Image (cartoon, rainbow, N blue to C red):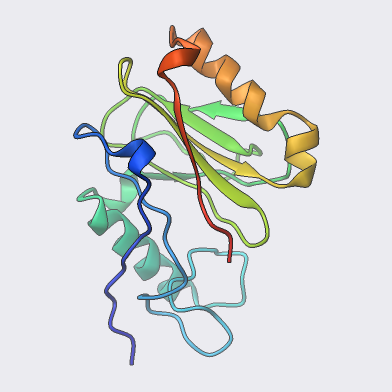
Length: 167
């Protein structure tokens, strides 16, 4: 029986009052058997209801509705999606980073052997979630994301990064 208590890892680099963040581990969810208990991937062999409930746990942690969770179809690219509102459908869009300056949006990145990276500008309230594997790194996904920050009037000196663990 799972406890359904999720305890994400937090970065001191992103310790600001105007955002919540977390690198969620495999523990604390509804999945079992061959899946880690907090499996959030519909492309796994897990039951869809388990994945949905796991995603809901992540959203509950952020005190937001599951409709506010945005996850793209990660394809090991250098593409960045700008998320403009909570009604935006993102799940079928091929990209490996999302960026927003809108409140109440949860940007979700799924990883296995790639690294999750979060970037935040506390002055402009811009946040990005980036999926970085070796292919995305070669294709400059991180520098493209920083360029997106600059395009949204951010200054490089204000951008804080946190590289999450991979499990």
